[in-house]
Amino acid sequence: MKVIKPLDWIPLGVKSVFLSGSIEMGMAEDWQSSVERLLKDTDWIVFNPRRDDWDSSWEQKITNTEFCNQVIWELKALEAAEKIIVYFSPGTKSPITLLEFGLIVGKNSEKLIVVCPEGFWRKGNIDIVSDRYNIKQVATLEEAVEILKRSL
Image 1 (cartoon, rainbow, N blue to C red):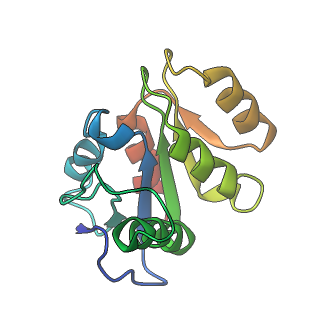
Image 2 (image 1 turned 30 degrees about the vertical axis):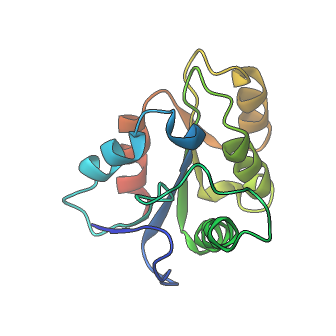
Image 3 (image 1 turned 120 degrees about the horizontal axis):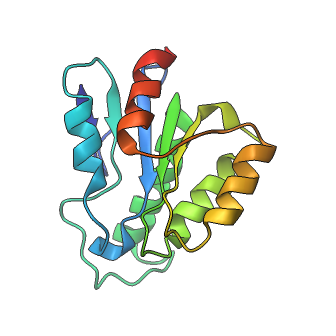
């Protein structure tokens, strides 16, 4: 397994997974590290958007180079990834995760593996959209990784 983080180069056409999910400006648990540990003995390339040098004081505007480059990197990684694990952490709002989920639904729903535990404030919406678009949805990150390991 190899981990690629912002703003590293994103390879195309490789066995890769994007980790879309709750970060909440650093307030959510670091679930991405758990997924990395579960994939450590595989040949998956992991696109992890959780940036080690993120500065929460960066203004979230297109004119802010650091912020803009982060968002562009995430969009490119979403498009390049063969699979996307989407994790909605209970107790968070996760607006960017909801945005990323909406960008993929209908267009590339087969790429998605969704984890939306009880307690996420819009679980009903995620359940309905997942059902309507035949998106794989599981209860835990461990289950999502098992599906990922069997998928290609």
